[in-house]
Image: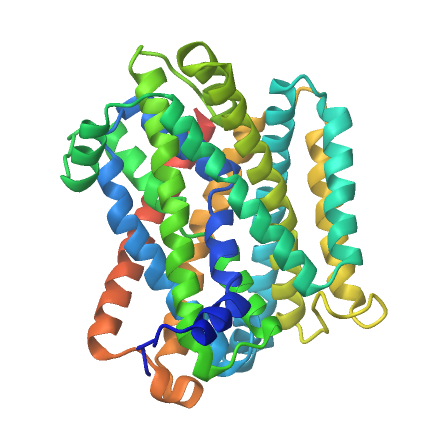
Length: 416
């Protein structure tokens, strides 16, 4: 596989035509649950966990690169490949699990939308239905090219967190030191937070969405290097944003000994400490993250299930040609919006449940991916090299072990 790129206007334009799936998928990883986790890390442990973002970014790049490579080489989605190589019955149960997980995640995203809206004085009973309709209408009436452009614009709004972090006036020398020099605290709370940071990085839906979007975009093997660059840039950007979320809460809430329970609390807590506009920007970022993820999670599910069951799918297809695709997408939007409008609903509980379900499913997805990636009949010369494969399996084993612990911890917190 050629990896050299000659810099010219032609290659720049070619990259710009291919860029999108990697950046979009990675940025949606900073969804409501992710932002809450990073906010808690900064407010509880200050800058001390910043170093973990470097290995976390490398792990995210590793998994996303493998998935992107598989999509470009095979021109098939992940669910499609699982059905072809492991059978319909295995795929069916996997898709049922994915639907359950992603419905919980979608509800969690609408919870973030509701919480952010209330910071701005907008009732969830007004905001959630409006957002749900706009998200649904955008996808139903749009095509892949238009939707991708909208999603790329949503990625730009994440820079609100970078501005919030700067407005918090952190100790930059300490930020740099904490990022480059690992430190460790031998406490259960610190270890659990470290596991949470890793566990929130790689979600099951990401692998299905990235591969499906690359296939629908029609990226060819000879242009794969540009998709690889798209993935790398996306992963770096998303964890730079994560760094500034931690920095913002560490420089303010942690510094004064405050405490929060979720991302909305962090936005409110920033206002008296870093200025009301820093808090509003943080809340605006949360609102954007919720809307962004509430758009993509149902879309990813619709792609995956239709591929897995052999149904027609895709944003470029009409409703009459892909009824199952659009019905599933619409149903998930409705469920996510309706559940959040139930009075006195425990939003924290929902976020815990979605995290637990993610933790249960992602190790299974990674195992399927690695089996497919090491099959020469499927990948040909694009299978993992021996060294790369060792790194990939170690990363997979680490992810499986840590997410397993995360599931146990999350269940324990939910019960307690």
